[in-house]
Image (tube, helix red, strand yellow):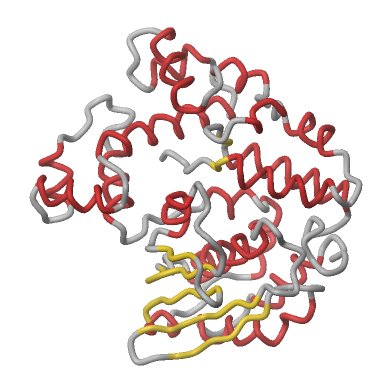
Length: 333
């Protein structure tokens, strides 16, 4: 399964925050095997494995779970204690109730409120106390809310919509990929909505499972993904079936999985600012970056992805990321 890779603008925001606390971010990048030159191109992306290794190093160097984004330092282990407090009997409603009760445990953490409607539940998040000029802590709080809850209940918590209280960034489409739902910008408050029936979904995880989850943290949070309800998410899932067989389904076959015509599918994707061809390129890109982060050679990756020769793969990779595969291999584990 091809993991979604992480755009470098998100990583740059985290590094700016923690660098302001005095941490040597260049040393942390070297430890994680990430060439700093990659961070200068907005097209560059990193595998969750690479970013997780970097974040673990930054946690250790800073001693701050919030990496400088809280109103005060959150000592290492704060987030783990919070996770332990959230895991327990009950359902999603109980989880959010506990989250609201515990939100004062982390200095400057976002303030959460829940409103239940007949069809949609709405969670509003006030991040005004955060030291978060790049909005990264707010974004990541919403990602954690979705992915940790999904893990806890053993099924996807599909958001109906995400509302963000800042102007749309240059990488706005990445947000719809990240959350798997429509995302609006420039609203009065950060909020997410989801089907109210999900409030009754029971938690199924044990403390022993949580310990294993935390041991891998934050890699599972970064790499965990359940396809959302957007057409592009469902198309990616359909295309992925042919990725390593080098036998891509055609437009009609993909459209059939969504129970629409190929013409209607193209129009839906156009409304999202994407296309079948672009999604296929993104799949190839993410698969290549993830494989090289795991130690595969350039020749191996080129063969796996169906390129006739390594030189053709190198040209495609440069087009996708702005960097050569060699640059990523130098930064490999």
